[in-house]
Image (tube, rainbow, N blue to C red; front, side):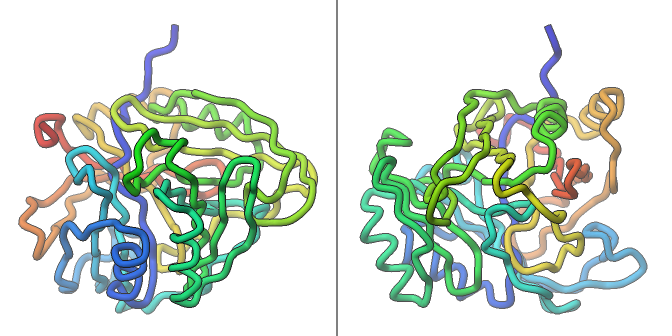
Length: 303
């Protein structure tokens, strides 16, 4: 029997943008999430996010669902100041990388209408599952699912949808981090990912020990997946996921022994304006370039 990897819960998903207030309004007023904390945007060492040798500035605005940050994951809305954000989120579900954030809502039609009223557009509706895929005004894709999927009528952050090149390789990587497969399904209806018509692919559903938030890995045969997850940390859109570990040094030793290369770290990250102490973090990267951040946060913090 294999030893599970060190990740214990999903702490947050990073959403890079120009204006934190705009995205916060979309998530809070539009979908019923709630703000938690915000960094103050002071200059920081760029080495943490891959900008070695230079100072960077960004604001990190954290929002979560009604369960609160001790239970639920958060969205880190990262508004880049210097360097400025670049590119635009792609809405092609077959492009490799993080493709969508999943949210369960009490009323999918009302939530979708609210996002459309704020400048978004409906990409698809899947009557068989109740899912509506919406592209918000900045180009990020949201999978809106009915409450039956979560067992509650509260808005909840539910999943991260990632397109991969090699499902076996991506599964192996995720399992070495600490994810466990809880579902393996064929995908034949493009409406589930925002496109009309038939498709041919496979979806693995995975989760870590302490959090029902799921990682959905999609592999595509027709049409095939293409490209690679964007490399710069200031790329607009959904960029990385952060995972809680009890002990960062032990976590890095475990994943290194399992064949996962550490991209950056350990590093100390200040959280000015939030009241949190400096955090110890490190980064690993999946086979398609998606970054995962290990954050040392003992379990006692969440009791």
